[in-house]
Image 1 (tube, helix red, strand yellow):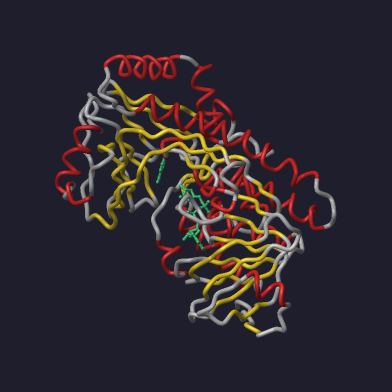
Image 2 (image 1 turned 45 degrees about the vertical axis):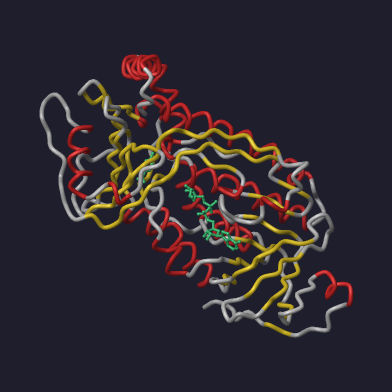
Length: 418
Ligand code: APR
Ligand code: PHB
């Protein structure tokens, strides 16, 4: 069970009242914590769990409801180091029971499949397990261990990160203004969160790249086409055949960046998938009821540094990748695996790991940024004939060269966490 958040009207110092001047709302001060975490995605929840294992207290503040975060359909591939970490910290039971271990992927182009065999090339595998399943496991573990996760909070704001007594103000699910004092703030609030904005504009350096296409994703109640993922390059555009279980398929189509789901009725999606996934020796796409449909924008984005004073950014709050390399959730988890060592050390008076956090995390982030850009460029149609020939040449190289396939495999299964 979650510990009840106590909302005590404590005798706040004048200085503190001044710092949170909210004339219309009575500010309660909740029990202080060591690490205040904004966002209950994979990054925030896992950080809270890892800190608990390290004996450090935290509170997670989430803007959405528990139901919402547990049902939001996102990515679904766990790298080898991610699955290993989840197992090591007691979160592997359901993943190992229902997750699907894959030893390779298919690259489909020129009407033929070319398998990249991860197990043979690099001796590792990946696990197909939906992000919302990871989130469900994490929420359950946090509540079981008495962790504090507050859902449905609004107006989250970060204060005094350049002092050693930062705090967060927010409005709780009952509409009461709250103030949470802490030693450290972890901004795990995703790309659209508020934490990144607390880093002064003069300090924050943003590098990004947008792509002229997006992914239309569907979840369908139909067995997957193949037991492994199929990444297809086709003259009409990219298609990806993934899955969530032996009965549920996850499929994606490259669409234009400004297209909407309304322009893609189910019949049109199935027809387009059948064309893009066609192979020379026939084969069909399994058609079934569509359970979920959405458009995902494609963007590469890195904000640095990932630390400002007592604020540490992790996951999508600091960086996003196009989904082609299946790296988003894995990068978020790699970041918090670093923070889970750096923050307890900082709180014990050893700042070295915290001081190195941004640089260490960014090295892995940029490797994943490159791989995601590389997979995206190699598999999507831009309409430019030169791009088309470069991409096909790269695909043929991977299909014919063990060295090239090994490089793809090593990146796909995930380089070791630092
Ligand atoms: N206050 C509190 N919570 C917030 C706020 C806010 N101001 N803004 C955003 N949040 C919450 C979001 O509702 C979300 O639940 O922060 C959470 C961030 O979670 P994710 O977006 O899942 O980000 P992260 O944990 O870094 O995981 C990255 O998510 O977007 C995918 O592909 C991405 O798989 C990757 C993973
Ligand atoms: C998914 O299953 O959602 C998925 C798989 C592979 C990707 C992206 C998404 O590259």
